[in-house]
Length: 124
Image (cartoon, rainbow, N blue to C red):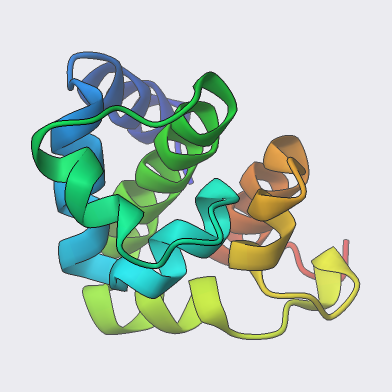
């Protein structure tokens, strides 16, 4: 993954409001996964975040990291692979899915795991 791709994804996500970030994540990952990674027990909360309410600061941060990772993975691979990466067990995250790692606030680890996936440095 190139630095320019990371910077571009960060810039794109930073320019979006929480409603747009939620909308895009729900479209790509589904409301249940978005609620989980944001730390919400309410699977319908992402639908409200898309329109009228805003998530907590912590949920917003986790969603913004998820969106950045999504964008870089989808651009570097494809949307199907990006979705599978988010929900599948990940050896760099202790065999936990990135969705659950984000829920726990392990944003840096998720970013590192995505970088390793894209640049092929799994075993490095």
